[in-house]
Length: 132
Image (cartoon, rainbow, N blue to C red; front, side):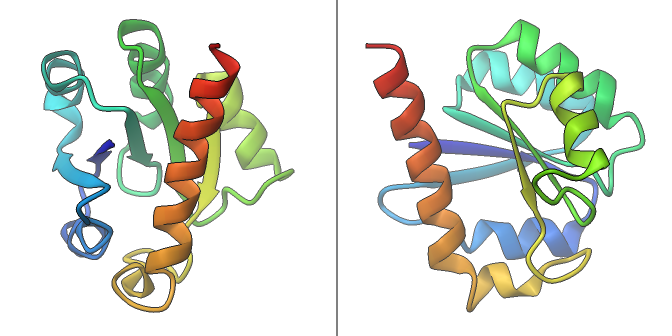
């Protein structure tokens, strides 16, 4: 399984790269190269750091239309059922995931690592089952 993380926040990118495992290949890009990279590499999931990208909404819409990847919005205010989460879904996100521990979310490299890796795995599994 492959995950492309789109972020302008180096700290968050480093923390998220800790999700890499033999079952999950994590790469990252900046917003301006995200669409071309997603179309070339065909990741299973594209996760957009909505806190660091000023134009996250239009980028999310473009990625949802231009790729077959699952598009995920990740942000501090993106709690399920929140107004922010609803906005990201309207912009094209297939799923919304809150950051576990603030802007840089250092816990992705520690205590939250397994839970978030499992969440991405489950998301892809659900998508594949729905397409059968």
